[in-house]
Image (cartoon, rainbow, N blue to C red; front, side, top):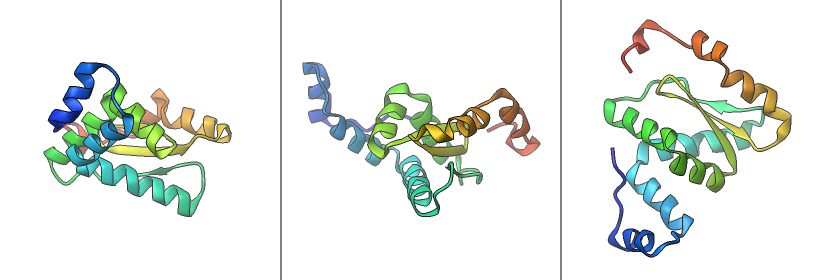
Length: 130
């Protein structure tokens, strides 16, 4: 799944520096499922507080799953989203997205969430081919 890059944004990239707000808008419009997932988790974290907010429901289809993978597997996209929303993103199993505040008080919970142990404990047969 590729981003839908406008001619103007492509021209920015060809000239050198790209305005990150323009890039983030490109991500928002190109990957709407991933954008909505992350946006809703950020809102949930702000309302509920706590160490993190996460989604454990698999995407409705392969296109949505592809959007999550694209958003979170790309260092540029993931980094831009983290800066835009002011959070740290974590990802397990092709669908379990979590947002953590930048506050260092949750570093231990983030480390647990992204640990090998947590990855193994989050496995299930129905997600084998995701």
